[in-house]
Length: 297
Image 1 (cartoon, rainbow, N blue to C red):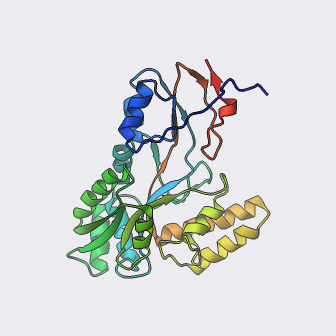
Image 2 (tube, helix red, strand yellow):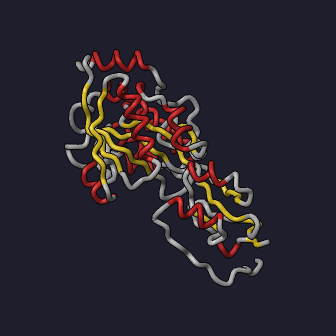
Image 3 (cartoon, rainbow, N blue to C red):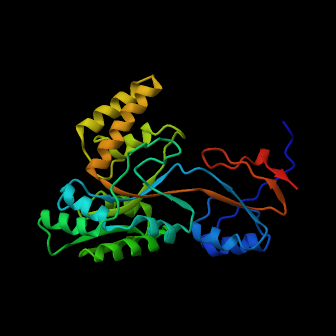
């Protein structure tokens, strides 16, 4: 192939997201990795910024501690799901930088067909709360990663929606991912914000196994369903693609019925670059910029 015209790459780390925006505006940097929605909305008006946009391969969700009360009760989990108005939440948090989740897997890698989680319905939410014995509502701890910039607005919107059905959140902020993961695994956690993506792009079996297989060390939800375990075990060894997808479809369908989490959105990774200097940016499916294939103007 063509020899790269780039002799040297210089990487810079910014703790402050706004300083990153200033740097590309002032020509101090030429490429930004996976920028959040609020930056996309602002930078697009500058005139010299172009974006490389990938199909989403991740999911952000509101997780329940399925191991202990109160959210061992599926009716309460469904009450929370029906109390959250997800479409406007996704728009306000991500500014068009995400796709509304229908379930745990991005549609780009898995055809849901008719499979989707239940939608917004306040009356049904209140009804389910009463059926579960919480007619006066309840208070629940939510573990929130304060180091994740966009999730502060996310948790505020969730809190506002749940307040309307008298589900009150006690928000516990964590400062590091180590602290966050430790608290999520503890009994003090009842709700938490999290997300993930598959290790192998295009193959969702591993992602489902990480989050929803009962014996997985990454199953922070404490979710257990023998049928889901069985279908994931079969999918792991099945060589026929159609049969394998059928097992995965059955697993997703059961997961949506059980509501171990509220699936919120799939982020569309955006890579910003200075189009006055760069003609073409190439990014592989794992989000790694291929600098040897980058074309300069």
